Length: 311
Image (cartoon, rainbow, N blue to C red; front, side):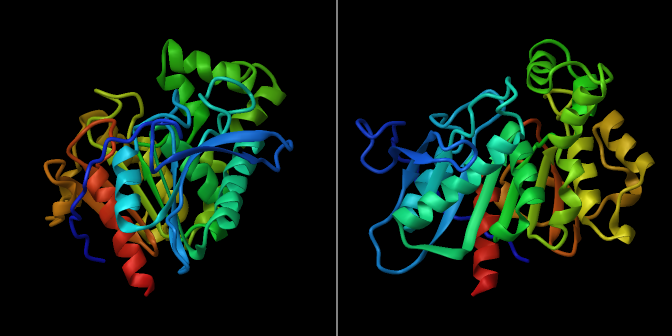
């Protein structure tokens, strides 16, 4: 698959219907508990079905966050629909953090978009960064049938492992979400298991999945790249999986093992040059020169490439 660098037009968007002429603040009914949940939404006026991009806020964010604004700008320019749901807000309580409420909130946001606009059900794309990348993997595992493609950036894939790797705020958030520290009791341990993407990701094998991590994340960021590498292993063929030793080298050295180095030509990452890439079936892992971040141009280029390949 060739990745091409799109032109991105940055617009001045505000997070509410009052201040924004394009994105609209809406509420929709969630099947999780029949409550009204908020989201930012855009639908072009068209009689032709259009793709939908679902963007997921970061770990501590909510539906008004602007982290994926360049992607919403791009959707508006391109004439695609866009939705940015709240899915219970920051990940610091049981109703959030990969819960059944979260899963049903996001599915219900898609259903709202389908009713409010003419959506091409075969062209629904999901993108998230950090905590949003984590939730994107959760959704890939729970509902692989829903997505034409999922682009997950610097995601968490195992909450128990991440708890051990954290101090302070994020560790406290995990405890508030799961009811205690790992090992507290069987009920708490089950919460960690049920909320972790690795529990479900094998069900996403065959889904077009785009996993990305900055080589320095975990050193100059909050999520070690082992989370991305292990997620890739869950959806890849056995022959394509990375070994425990290879993953540990990536994490410890913030470098690519010498026997895995290959030249990669991909201008969509701009200055965040890809250092390692492997594809297995429809899943791709890219480790780039960077930290805990989204490379917007690369996410957009991948979505465009997947969409063009479907035509």
